[in-house]
Length: 596
Image (cartoon, rainbow, N blue to C red; front, side, top):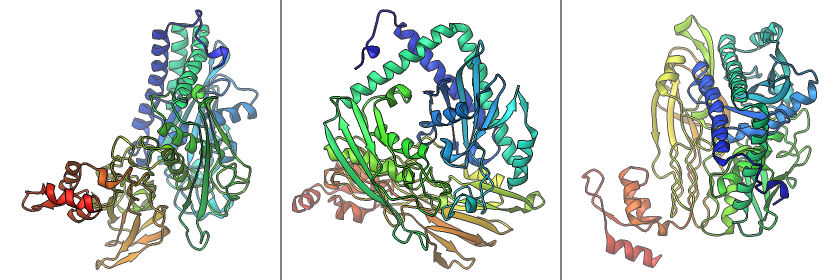
């Protein structure tokens, strides 16, 4: 620990530090509430696929509250680009930024940046990032897995462009967006929601500094970062010294990636120096499709995997980040992408693999460390749907669905979450309301349910997958699915079993089913459906170590089957679900486990 990090007599009172830290989180939550309630698209207003953050004027992440890890850990990269590109920042400015080569995550994550001035000094930048329902891609989806480069991807790119000066809108920029966005009024409502969110932060930060004084707030920032670093030091020093290598792969998809994408994560844990180094340089070059990671996502996702694996409620800010070093390579699929390679899918797929590989690597340290892999499919439940709405005079619609969820990873202490979503969001997104999606779009959901026997078995079980079935009402619907985790499922650790892989089918009007590839664009006619399920989470520890009572409860909930209870867990049950008299046959269970 450096001298600068040691407490001194001149430091602020710890109660005041706690008050100010929570006040900043409160401002970020007010930003989030503004965006959630004011947005128009379901992907933002229902699924909460957005994140808000506050950075310091010198580009350090200060507060992120409940922002999605994939979005906010790299916020400072975007604010740094704003400062580098504009040496005339002024009160009343606002910027649009979605350039993956300048610190953004991927092009669909449109970010509004507002520099906040206190007594003429740029002290903060408010960041409101939201995944758009449409960003002008060449096909109707914000996730274009097959895009050979940024030109085929086709998204509108704003490399930190000033959209407001002196609080006045640049209408030229707005007209450009309206012309290229498929549903311009929906986009404009989402944009105003993000802008309002950032302006709320500006107002509240000015009030905070007026109440406590600029100098005291500056002192708080430094002490808060130092405290956060001390907490991180303490967490890392509880780990054993180790060098770990973990490897996995993104699924193949024809004809672009017949062999998939191999991925390697190397970790160097040094508790003596209290440093965790993550090396991603030994990976293949960028691929000719949209699965490349942006710099922000490569960093965000391995850092998220580290935080998932450390004990304690650690602050997520520039102070704790001082103790994590990420090594990247230019032109690498999980590094800094070389132009014009597309990073359209940078926040999912390979990104989810990085989270999984990092957190499951910690399980190699021994029982009680790390997590299993979480389900990471962007299958039918996460598709982008589009078409024309007969109820609104044939007006176009488009939206990213977030209806189904993947099973969460098992940990050394708990089963995987049912409401996990994806590894990159760590359970912080919402699942769409089926009713709201049906109100907003001319579609019908036939069913949405948890799938039995899909969570990876273990001492702690992976979360089950969900199945969803939906289709159009009266007019054709385009469905774009860019899924992973259909060939390489979420893996269990320390004897835990893998979760079930994802899959999807097209269901004809007469009920015939056709298996769909993992990356596909499909047209549905009225009477047709797409049926798909996401992936189950991996298990942690041997299934034979799971208490029989918990296996029984899983079967009663229909998350497990009687057959798997016997064959995988060694738990023999008598009775039946139908007669409601299921019970553990203790003698048979003891014999089954003893003979395994």
